[in-house]
Length: 396
Ligand SMILES: Nc1nc2c(ncn2[C@@H]2O[C@H](COP(=O)(O)OP(=O)(O)OP(=O)(O)O)[C@@H](O)[C@H]2O)c(=O)[nH]1
Ligand SMILES: [Mg+2]
Image (cartoon, rainbow, N blue to C red; front, side, top):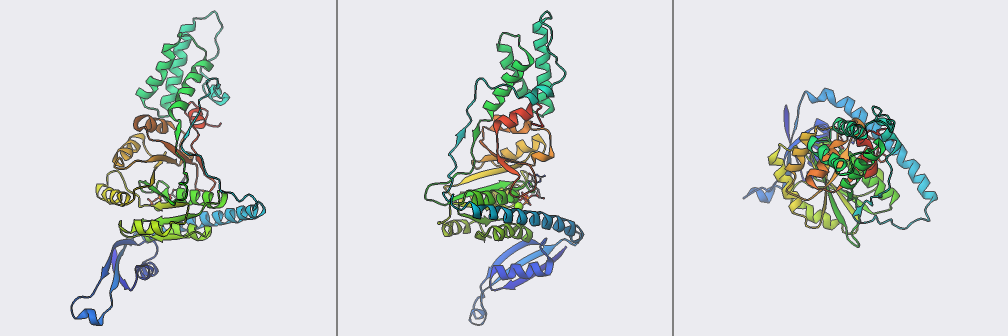
């Protein structure tokens, strides 16, 4: 580990020095403002001292990652330029689309089970009328139960869902059984809190969560959608100064989108920074990844969030994380109110955790992300689609 100190008149200059010498994977250990005392105060100026460290072993693994990041950015840039061309042509549609407030999904009582679901449960054929219908129903229950467990729906929740099939007249077809459970799941997932605008006010929106779950990428996706498609005025703030690369990652997206970005180094700076962006519609705030076990840093995050009263917080969770760890993460963040964003749906075929967490915590849901492409791979969570996937319709 190589540890170096850099002094300059401003934080930015000191950070730049560190970056130039150690590269963008350097870790920032401390940032101090130093005011010379006593007689020295007449001769020397105040300065900022940045202490940075570089793990020597990391140098080798930086290059492939950087190459990947550059590829992603190149794709993003080309996407943006195509989108900008299209938008120039459609300039007359200039009104800002204000998203609806909290949306409750209407449950259609007559909704039929998607065909993908039916074909995904091949074990059960419709039996001739003459056969024992009640034993057929119990086989159907068992098949649906196994389907739910395969998708990592927790056992007790699967049992609760299936209880709906016991209260009916005990005989039902596969389609009826699936339909009942499908509607139950849709109902369970039905509170969606996407990003909305506060009228006449800049709205600060924090993105928090464990390391590497996709917070910064999700911000880039949303910033891009709200800037380019919804024509909102977006600003970015990052409180993730743990790695220089983290600041640069977001700054690059801000430059491409031509939106302002500020970096904060101390919790107290957040309020002034938000005030500075009072003329914007939305302020997306990136934070450093915090594992549920890292109580010290979670405490710092809590302090940061406590500085801001009127805010929205999204807890970003990767669906490729084990269900039990997701549960612990949600519990560890209970010092604040939040809605849930699920990332990396493209890396798993088990969607049960979404249902488990929604059921246990009652937290509203917001977005899903399905890949690394900015900004395409994001969508508002659709309860019908997730219910379908949980019941096996993965290709729908
Ligand atoms: N497959 C897949 N990869 C994703 C998705 N979202 C983000 N990633 C990738 O996950 C990696 C980490 O993403 P970041 O956005 O840097 O994650 P982060 O939460 O900001 O990470 P830290 O700031 O280090 O805590 C990057 O390689 C992203 O491209 C997704 O939906 N699917
Ligand atoms: Mg990040």
